[in-house]
Image (tube, rainbow, N blue to C red; front, side):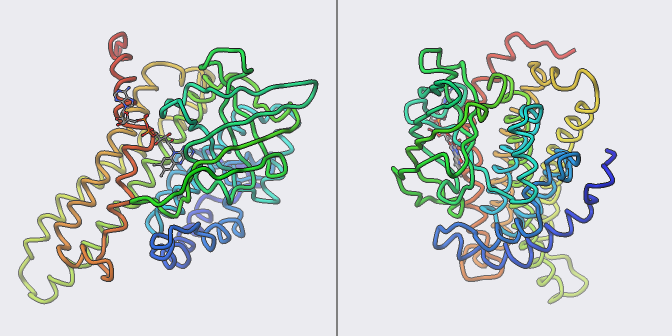
Length: 393
Ligand SMILES: Cc1cc2nc3c(=O)[nH]c(=O)nc-3n(C[C@H](O)[C@H](O)[C@H](O)COP(=O)(O)OP(=O)(O)OC[C@H]3O[C@@H](n4cnc5c(N)ncnc54)[C@H](O)[C@@H]3O)c2cc1C
């Protein structure tokens, strides 16, 4: 992909992310996990390096990064800290919706410019009490009176909700319309009040800090993203979510395999000339890790190529693309825990212990969230009904 001359080269973005992953995120990952605390050091470093606006088009001052580039950044950061990478991914998914569906309006154009100078962190509010994980239906509706809106949403899970500078919320277009007639609303910190309703003491992804909140917002009607959420979900939210999540789950798995590989090499050095039996397991898990990486890379590259064509965006509304993204999510979320499990079989008790350099406990617990974060059963049910009518030509 050709990049604008004002945007930073991708190699620079990658080098910055790699340094933050190693020198900041990895250093604090254990305390972030143990104390279930927001990874403030990593997010501060990402903001300092202006890595929260990499997706903003270069015409508005950003780096105009492609989906495959963003996915690489999330994967690299996940090798240092899963929660930090999930926060970066969730933020970029919200930015993708604003860039791809809002940048033609003066309000969103200004907001995207401000993103470059101020690096606001944007959270996602798709979950809602009573919709049971179905992101394509809402109970709450935005009420517009003149040029102002008001909205109240009871969300079950809002990652880094207390640390956000803005929230992107799904809701009904108005309170009277049907549950699936949804829009996205951007509320900036001054526009909302949060009331925490539940705690976040979980098995993994503890640093994402994702309790439930009652969100009360009010603001200018311009903050309602143009178009239907049905379209922004299929064209942007689902593609970016499933690719960025898959990439970061692969990054977590890669770090677990890396720990196993370090242990196997140390073992090999003890008996020069003989290959330890654990090296066979390493070869097997390495192949699975490569397959997982190739899956998200291929989908991201295909998406980026499609973007460069005229038919681009509307193609994304097809069943073929919906199935492709669903398959990527379910496959990678199944594969990540299996890979970490294989890494644990190599490291044995040293991987099982929390105080060992070969520990993969945190990785294991973190990747278990993958199949729940939009339930794989729900996705499989949607794919099953599409496959009844889809013909792969
Ligand atoms: C780490 C993490 C961070 C998150 N961050 C956010 C966030 O920032 N913002 C946000 O809005 N949400 C967030 N979520 C919530 C997430 O987006 C989903 O809303 C949530 O995971 C769905 O939970 P659920 O178990 O109620 O899902 P459901 O989809 O309701 O699943 C509940 C159960 O029903 C089964 N089931 C569901 N549908 C079907 C079906 N069609 N056929 C058969 N069985 C089915 C499932 O297998 C499951 O056992 C986060 C979740 C996690 C794990």
